[in-house]
Amino acid sequence: MSSLNAHRSTSRTPVNALMITGRRPVHGVWWIALWLTVVGNLPLWQRVAALDGQPAQRVLLLLVMGGLVLGATAALLSLLAWPRVFRPLVTVLVLVSAFNTYFMWQYGVVIDPTMLANVAQTDAREVRDLLSPRLLGTVLLVAGPPLWWLWRRPLAWGRWLPQTGRNLLGACVALLLLVGVVLAGYQGLASLMRNHKPLRYMINPLNSVYAATRLAADQLPKQVRALQPVGEDAQLGARYAQQKRPPLLVVVVGETARAQNWGLNGYARANTPALAQWQARGLVNFPDVRSCGTNTQVSVPCIFSPLTREQGGDQTAEHQNLLDVLQRAGLAVLWLDNQSGCKGVCDRVPNASTRDLTLPALCEGGECFDEAMLHGLDERIAALDPQRRARGVVVVMHQMGSHGPAYSKRTPAARKAFMPECTSNTLSECPPEQLVNAYDNTIAYTDHFLGQTLQWLQNQADQGTYDTGLLYFSDHGESLGEKGLYLHGVPYAFAPEQQTRVPMVTWLSAGLQQRSGVQADCLRKQAGTPLSHDHVFHSVLGLMDVKTAVRDPALDLYAPCAGR
Image (tube, rainbow, N blue to C red; front, side, top):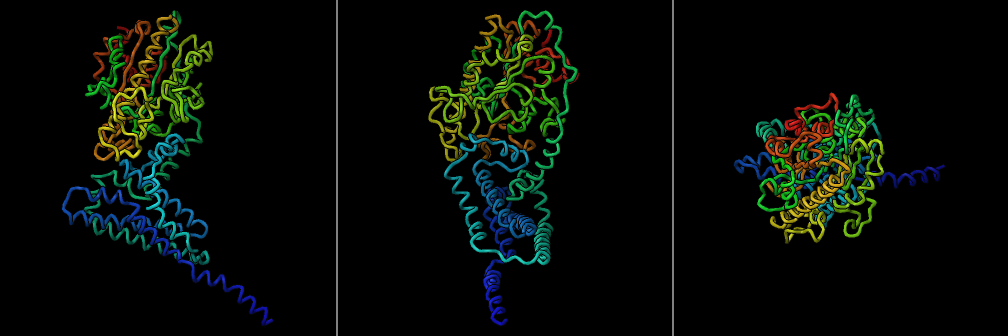
């Protein structure tokens, strides 16, 4: 018996030794919280340190902000301190903080729900464009030390009831720290948050936790509900009864083109020469147009929504869209995509992507230049329902356009008008003039693509096949280093003009002008009127003569000239 007891005692020794040598979870909570506060928030501290004010005031503000971030992070980690989940969840938070650090530091972005939604929609091509040695180095430096500390030795967990008490106690201590520093520096902190709202979206990793929670709470309930029908009364107008030729409208959704670098808007460079020539043939440029969002995930659904931005068009869609109304009225609709998808807009209409195309000189490395969408376009239209096609056709082309940061990949070698250009995806490393060259080359290529599209439409009109028209607009703009910002995606409330002011042009053949009563000369006189993405839904319905109660003539950019 004594031998058996001795054996049992010996068998328990390794377990006890493990408990003794294992780290206490509370140490992990506070050490990792401190690391994330100091190192994982370097872009935040750099931004705060650069604010105006006396040095002593900035130091005090940094200490108050540091205590707030430390307390909030430690409280979160304390609530996660459970066996089997603590280390995996903390690993995710640390890695997310490391990636956030790189993108906030490198591009000046902030992490809010719309940015997180945009990240969730990123495809393999976009991920490839973002990879760089600096990204890997930043992730290793920010995430490496705390993860090594976390995983190299086991943690000593107690039974669930005492562990619950310790977790709650740790969270309470962290919250007391948070409350204490907020009370001590409330005046400066309140002023900072009021005058510099983007800073709240730079707090790692709480920004990602908040964004993910908001995104799930907003989108998940809407995704399980069917979209509400729109324009159930839609029908074709009187023009269709005796038409000689059906109308064909091409809507081009541009990508990341900003109005500031658009040649037709008075930009110093002539980077829209093709469109300039088409102005003599009826093309009209609109110089004052605002986007609905600052990223594709928001802007594209909003453009085609029946709701204006103020009505909630920039929120997760609850209604069907323009393409549904056009199709319900009896028209043929086709979406062609050279981007990362239509964001749900084209789910109920015929659609195709360039991903599967293998065209020499146009498609390489899994990506196509925008001209690929014109390849086989006649055959794609011919494959649509013949009865609908006989009434009229609306084709939407979604460009790759000026998508960054790899601007140099968006233009063929033969189309690079401005050299030398930036070829790095680490934009801050490029001389500003080379960065602008690379971006302006993408605008020049969009000009070429639109010129090719216009010529195809003119050929259709000359052949007597269709009365044709084009409407082009970009989904949002882009920052090229102004105020330390690159790319796009800044929350709309404080986004710079470079990300919200976009180009827009339209062209109508002689046949479509006669059919609609909309004359180019009249449109030119109206072109200076401020417009936005809110006008697209109603303008397309008006131009295509679709009658429905959901169309608002006040938001139809063609309406002031219709019938003249």
